[in-house]
Image 1 (cartoon, rainbow, N blue to C red):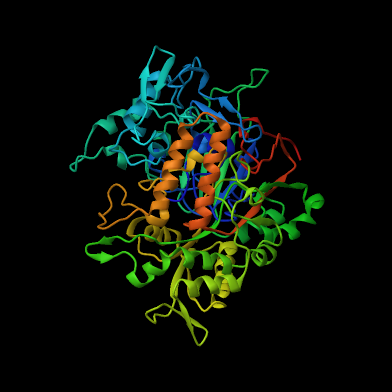
Image 2: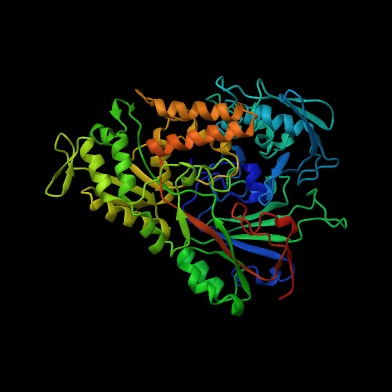
Amino acid sequence: MKFFRKIFLAIKHLWLPIIFTSAIALTVTACNPANFKSSAAQVPQLVSSILSDPKTFNYPLSQEFPNVFPLIYEGLITQNPITAKVEPALAESWQISDDKLKIVFTLREGLKWSDGQPLTVDDVVFTYNDIYLNEAIPTDVRDALRIGESRKLPTVRKVDERRVEFSVPEPFRPFLLSTGSPILPAHILQQWVKTKDQNGSPIFLTKWGVDTPPNEIIVNGPYKIERYDTSQRVVFRRNPYYWRKDAQGNSQPYIERVIWQIVESTDTSLLQFRSGGLDTVGVSPDYFSLLKVQEKQGNFTIYNGGPTSSTSFVWFNLNKGKRDGKPLVDPVKSRWFNNVQFRQAIAYAIDRQTMINNTFRGLGVPQDSPISVQSPYYLSPKEGLKVYDYNQQKAKKLLLKAGFKYNNNQLVDDQGNRVRFSLLTNAGNKIREAMGSQIKQDLSKIGIQVDFTPLAWNTFTDKTSNSLDWEASLMGLTGGLEPNDGANVWAPEGGLHMFNQKPQAGQKPIQGWEVAPWEAEIANLYIQAARELDEAKVKAIYAETQRITQENLPFIYLVNPYSMSAVRNRFEGIKFSALGGAFWNIEQIKVTED
């Protein structure tokens, strides 16, 4: 699943997921009192639900959200979603050299893994040198660590028993933020990285799958995996060796157990919440009015963090390449999709305000940029960002200018081919399915036939990230404060360059793959922004990237919904954030008596 932007330092304390959500992903949190009833009453717990089973317990190989890693791992640093400040995690401090080319981290004393073994500088060096920087291991973490035009990687070395040094070949502004990925246990994993299978690949690539006994998954975060029952639940238990303590010296987290029920229907979760058995639920627009009138009676609060950090968009397959001599995209349709006027016409033809009013019940705003509105580098429409307000006439004029014409109100190209394409999304998300249905209807008004097809998640992601056998799709990405965290979306070789995907490790080669000049320009600007240390210049560079994306529309952005959750009032210490949700500070949250 190549769609979840992996920003672990954000995920850990923001619960942001990496990567790929819908406009409303509805990662609902819920509790069924019938489950664990007798034992659960003895310990403070939080039960949350996810829509599908986890795909792996091997962090470097994970490309999904939600995933288990924010609960079970920490990195050297983290980022506070309220203040946006970088804060210590496994490292108690760090020092940046005057030339900005080195950072020396000092680890906390007495750190331990969940099996009681010491967590040391050797684990840090192993995690980076043997895993994240190892070209034999396909991980998106490496994309965010590549520096400059050379795409060189940092070097990591042990200074002494508590200090580790990261070095870069040139100034790299997001350097500190890029060191937040989780640290992994060398005493368990090192042997698997060094040992190769018959194909010469590290056997690490086949380890820590979801069939691994939970007690073998060694972690350093606030929780460890206690149990996984396929299609039922994942159970996490407080890690007794976790390092955090409160001001009085009490061990954290306070919540003893976290349970993720695997519930494929968000409607079922809503029913459970309304019946009084659930702790919390993600509030989608179609749930809001129903739940709002029940706040007092149900003893819960609906938190609204404003626009989410996620995006939702339509994107076309712009890949002009071939596999085994066969074009990935029908050449006729590929010509349409690669015509910028065609993409702009599609953008004008989608009535986003009606989508907000109807599908989102007014609980959202138009989305026009790949950069989160919370980011200091976000360029607003008031500052000159191009927008595509609904305008059928503009859409038709652009299509005629591009050589299309109308035949009995049906759009045809200059060779007489009827303009018709398939639009895919993942099945089971009512919001996204409603968005797709409206897009189908909107585009029919300018003579385009859209075959809207929601697919099972695994089928959808296989098409869009592996076989590349698709025409147009509807999905989204989750962002954060630092645009460089999305560098692998905009780098042509990046793992999330979805609109013109280069083959990834282990995939069949593509012949004739091309990079458009505007694609290359965006990639170069991201490199410049990462290299630039003057914040005003950084903002100007990212402003230009947003102007280019809105002019060329690799993604046609749609709606940014409000981030909302309902949480029972028995949870003390909630500091809700659009970036972090309700439980980004889970180690500080307590369960009080009802």
